[in-house]
Length: 570
Image (cartoon, rainbow, N blue to C red; front, side):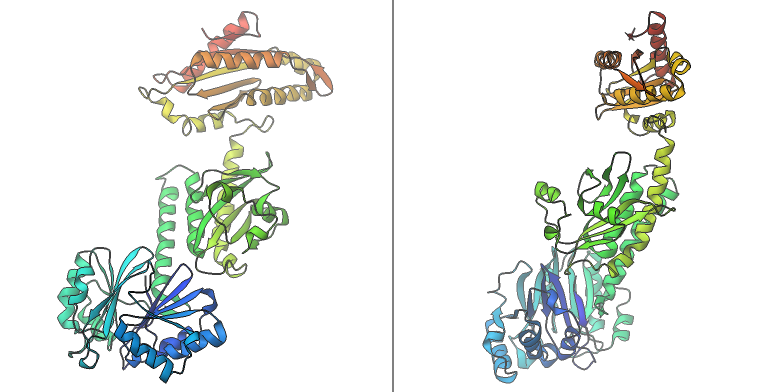
């Protein structure tokens, strides 16, 4: 939620100040001089506007305001607006910024919380702090990236904020190690804070004067110290990032290595999510290069169904053709960027990073793609690629394993799935059709090239191979998305047809028979003709797979025995 530039009280080295980013806007809560020094080291050009919410005008909260306005005016050139919690505080800020700091009116905007219409600002909350600032001390109630946030500012009472602290709220509460009339004392707040966390609020402690004592007193309440910025990234953000990464890798290990899930595709989903998390991208996808079909298609992708494109197109195709990482932070000006997905979905791609992945022989076989890096000007080819290198390497190993598995399921001569692929599909695609009482219909046929041995004996085995290739391609051309065709062995083929009655299966077998009978096949330089015989059956879930194949096989033999070149289903 909030990240702190400092979380200390007035007499510590780093004074209390927090920030968050939403829609490319940087929102600061107070700006002490110690906070300004850190802001000056950050890349402030990343933001299209800067807002500073002021809680009150003590120096440890606003002493860096003038310098920040100067920095924006003379160096960064980013618009800045100072937001006062009330009209009275607005007058004091106007005097401070203009007359003491010497900032000219055109250099900044000044408004109140009531006047500023922003989704992230719900309201300012009046509270009590010192006698000298009665009526001029406030906290804030915010909506940060969809989450309710309470920020107390300096206060000697929690009462004005209690109605806003509920389950899921992030409450940032000032706390002191010593009893005084102007701050919340840690001992007095112990039970209250425990109560807030017990009901599901997230409590963070800020404006602290002795962190060790406060931590010791409140250690059993569930409260945490407010997260400090560290090298441009808050320690809490680093912790969350690592936690997210470990959660993904733990799920990956349990689902794959411990055989909780036998779906190989889930491996790619986890690795894709891992890559997205590591570089804080909006979307990620992992692409396979199907060289047999000259296609690129997604093994896993965020928020999208499977995408299939020619391997000569898109930024993924470019990365594989050039064998180099591809980065573009202006994709609509890149001639290789494929806009079709954006046009169809309404999504706007702002930045793209593609890492090609290779097998152990160094042959490129796929690519990891990340889209739209959050809160930045885009991807950095060196730094982001370095962060993703391990994920990309694992993707390559996983894809190579997947390719080996897929190759073992395919017949090398015809390209069709083999008997191993057949049984694998029955454990995946067809498993619901094996359940008795499911109401799902499935049909199959087994077919055989008539007198195929004569082709080999007369024209040679090369000619026989050509006939097998031609026939397999012809059968496959009749496959719908619901069908699967397999080389059962030798010159025999099996087709499985989901959601298909026997009559429709017979009709398809007859169409294939007629088509083959009328085809001329170039078999090793000789034009020959062939015919096929078919045995069809409606799949019976009360019988085993082998028993169902046997029923269709018996009908195939009937077709053979009664003259060949026919379809039998009884």
